[in-house]
Length: 191
Image (cartoon, rainbow, N blue to C red; front, side, top):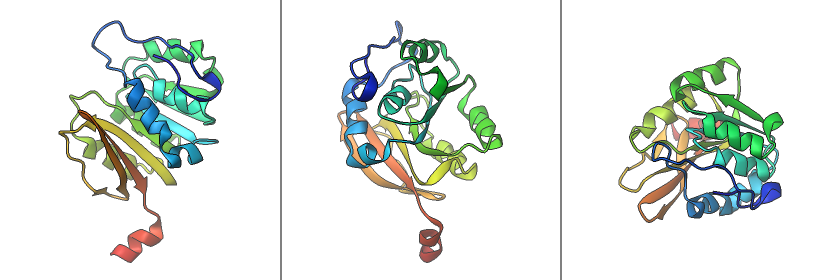
């Protein structure tokens, strides 16, 4: 595994030696950051890497100019190693808890994010629950994006609370679904 672009380009990072963590493929990693809206909006952002595993998505974002990334996972062994390897300690916050408790902590700290990555284990099929929690806790900035990598078999809802799908691409058995937050004017106009 390695960082694809930015200041850490070609930096190799630690990857899992077992099947407990299934890191994102380099093809999907590249696809996420190749979207024009990601290239245009990654600099000077605050990022949440939920279910971070190796931390490759958050580190990729930092490499491309994000200001800070919060890495969340129940096992943070690999992400800690990779943050240290990339010398990104000052820009990184690590929360070693499950996603629900982590989102509560972030709400209490009044953290808000421009980009949220959700690359969860396939056992988690209820992405609606994650999206609802993000929306209810107001963790996404008004112009923010949520990027979810999921099985192509898993159908995603068009709209959940104040977020809606604006881009979706299939890559073999995986799909990338991007949600964006609606602004208050759009919500009022639709009701």
